[in-house]
View (spheres, one colour):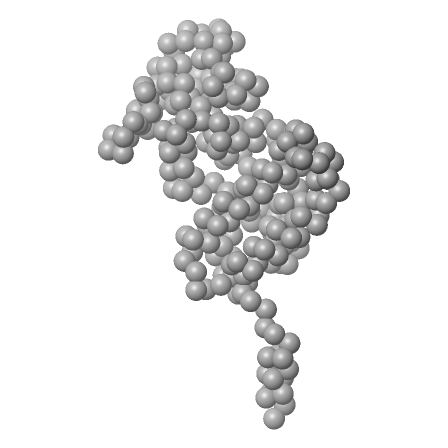
Length: 243
């Protein structure tokens, strides 16, 4: 497949692009901007490079010259989209002071914001995560691991420094758990907003959204959080301190 690595030895062609001049960079930015809108509206498979070129009034070959292939173009669109999202720790001070799980709750409660205000970049992220071919998905996964655009590593270190997370688990394991579980749970919330018919009972999610978020956080806390000290153990500690 042109522009995408088909094996683990040769890197994708679009990762070996030379540096571009300012005028060329401006053109690339225009192409990515137009392609973002086009992919969001038509999806990954139905999008046409020729239509993007026609909308910009340029030759289709010019797009291939800059990005190598449709996949290379989408990859640039995807990176631009996910980099536009706030990182986990970009929260109000009072939320950060409340701790690790308060930060997660803040973003889960604000999930609908992605639909109403950031629909295009979120749509692109959905397409990249679930609507692309496996070879391109491999490159997307490499990008997410190497760049950590959501700041998950920083969030986990924040929780460890506060003593809220287990220190017997590998950091990378906890990062992966959060990436997998939070992303899929948030996608479920957003998918219901975009198409309530995907859920068995229409309208159920909005009625039980807060309860579901609480249950999800409680489950996650049992998995990676520091276990709470039993009441009996706390009483023994207090008794020993008095002696």
